[in-house]
Amino acid sequence: MNLNKYIRSIPNYPKKGILFRDVTTIFNNPHAFKYCINRISKICKKKKISKIAGIEARGFIIGAAVAFKLNLPFVPIRKKGKLPFKKYAQKYKLEYGLDTLEIHKDSIKKNEKIALVDDLIATGGTAMASKKLIIKVGGSLKLFVSIIDLKDFGGSNNLRKARVDAVSLVKLPGH
Image 1 (cartoon, rainbow, N blue to C red):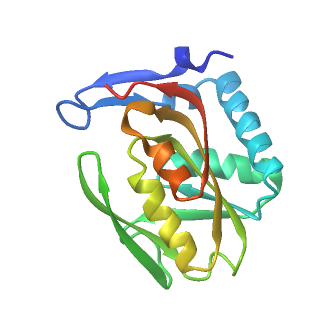
Image 2 (image 1 turned 30 degrees about the vertical axis):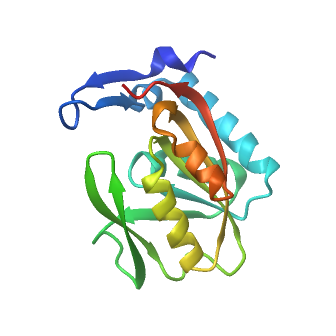
């Protein structure tokens, strides 16, 4: 399946100079969404993952579906102030600003193998912050899977340098 025809590109969002790649058009097509979930599930299954973690917000949609398909627990990695229990926080840099992610302290047990799922990777800042959180709670990030790799920004390479297997279903330019 050619996923490119299901990805909407929106110029100057969320600010001027950014070309936003929108995967909600994939979610809106049952065949394209099922294709993505099946492909990501196969990739995760090969790595013998213990849990699936998803980054807020689109990573929740993808990650929860993959966790359900593989009968694995799902771990939400959320934006600051959204988790109700004891948590770790990690600040990170976005392509267009700063933000903070959080994870519940009891969400991952020591040495569990984690697959992190999100809609896309650009610089890898969000994924690297999530990796730090996964390590703080005792887990080991073995795999990062996204639908889109914005190849111009080098995020997948940054993850590989940090010893994380990074896989994307589609590679697109970031500009």
